[in-house]
Image (cartoon, rainbow, N blue to C red; front, side, top):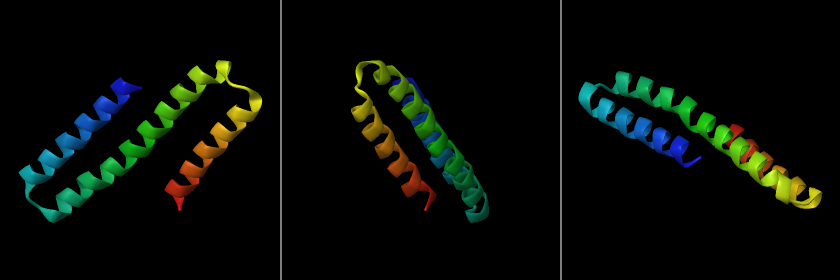
Length: 79
């Protein structure tokens, strides 16, 4: 999970430097649009990894509330 977050952060920094390098609003907007795909993808992958690792040690009630919380995060992202 940490490695995915490091890769995601590196992509963000590279994109910011690219925006500075191109020095054009239209191209920077395009780069920012590409970042909109990276963030949620990394979030979903890290959540899946985390939930699968903790699922064995949790009761069904705690697992239900964990999944409910993740669902709330997804709903907030989509609206």
